[in-house]
Image 1: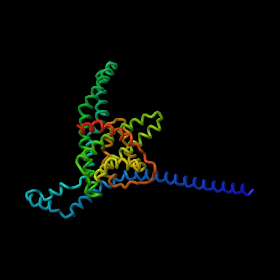
Image 2: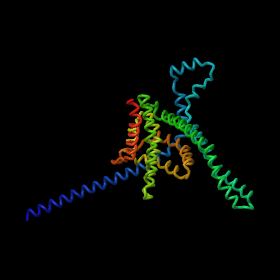
Image 3: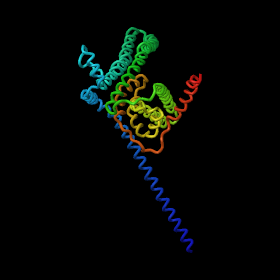
Image 4: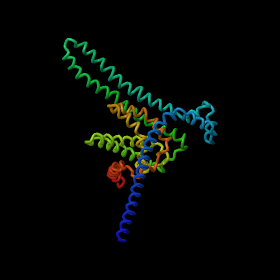
Length: 346
């Protein structure tokens, strides 16, 4: 009788311990879920700060530069260039974040995007209207002529205007993006800390470009998953992380972080970076044209560079890193070993 009571008591005691552990697990999961939601919302809010900081950043940077006493080298240059204007040296080092951002908007929105809209919404409808007037007596002939004329004009416009301007804008945008990132970094952090050697700098840049290209392809691949909601969500998460990497990479690169550290940091703190890249990922997916999507990206991306430089990512909210970059890193390592490795052994 006593032994049965002891057994019953032990069972009750063990069940209470199990209940306590279950409650602790449920509470910890709730706390983690709240932390993930908070990190996503914080990342989303931080991504929009660049639109505000942009308007007073140049003024504060230039005030710092004007109030800072000149160094010996600057004094020597000023003494040796007597015939040059007095403001020449100050103009060379003035911050032009807002100016570069306006230039990005003017090039990608005012020239590139506007020219496409004028061609597609103005010139093509006008030519179609002229053909209907010319072949008014024979509508079938007008439709036939237009079916040949429209593809020819679109191909000519894309080859002669869109493609060269697209490539040129990519080069110019990359230079302006770097200028914006460097000015924003000096405003908040100070002098950039680059990688230790030129060879390591070049290797890190090439490997980063390859990883980003493969990751973009991986995002396109997962979007083809047969389950439509799952494929769309996975593709959106990929684009959020990729755009967050784009925005923060300038800052981390100036801090001297190598690629593996940048990717590990994003994978370990993925909720924040998903929220940070969400606005840009959604806005660039709205247009049906890849070219128009590129225009939207180039117009908005300077704001995200500034936001990434100002942001302090939320860390440690999730114990499970999102290893989405691991497959493309493995593929990139294999490609590098097969191409650069044999060349080095020669």
